[in-house]
Length: 162
Image (cartoon, rainbow, N blue to C red; front, side, top):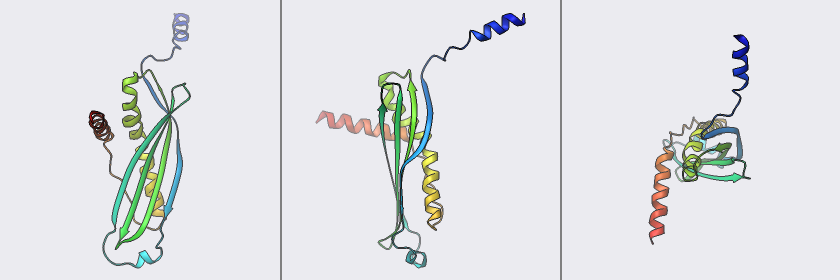
């Protein structure tokens, strides 16, 4: 009996069927932190700085083996009385293996699923640079990448009609 069980287990080495999305590597592609008015900004009175956060993303296929690079760009700027308190720019990238996804669904995976995976990493990196710059924590709110994808698709369709 034990031989049959062992033989059956040996035959069960096939790869799972269906779509595959795996994160192969996470890395910082580019980082910049500036505090051009330090240390003067630490002594400034005037309330909380105005913080602006911009998020962009890009993706590209690497060869034709199912590997894709997705890059999530975060630009965080803090200003107080028209002076820049800090500027943090982080390009957080991930190398993803994506297979078995229908062509019409691939863009959704690249622009919704992959950025959702990268967001915690870029949030941590931005917060780390800001606090090491001598400023309070900067916690970036969750991002609805699905809503951003839908807006982008609607804008592209509207532009195509003109």
